[in-house]
Image (cartoon, rainbow, N blue to C red; front, side):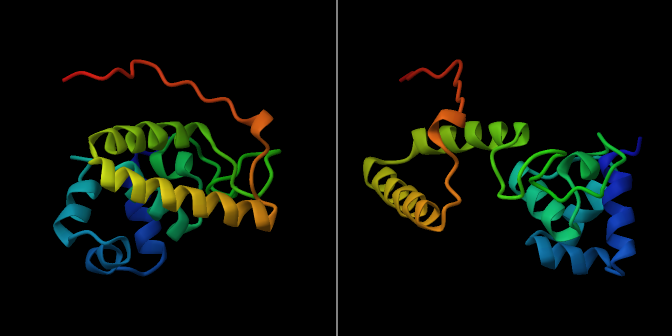
Length: 145
């Protein structure tokens, strides 16, 4: 299977984009794209997800872990198209938890308000995943001063 560097460059060129063009779409510099395409680094998870959405491929395909690009990002075979949490999202949850833990109490209230509003929005649209289908395990979380 291909590597992320190869896949990313293939997808970029298939869209007819320059490194500068895709950099603008993803909110990074041309130099950053060049580093990715040389295989020296990979993007952060949020940027990977944005690229997968932009190219309309699975994250596994973009990373070179799968040769099947036909399934849209956020879906897997047999999964609904409503965007329920995937294994890849687990890393994002961990990253968000780490960022949240570092925020001031005032900033955590802002984040909590945003989550509450998003929860209400999804509940009203009928796109909220049922609680009994959510399994969340956080390991190695401890408060250290």
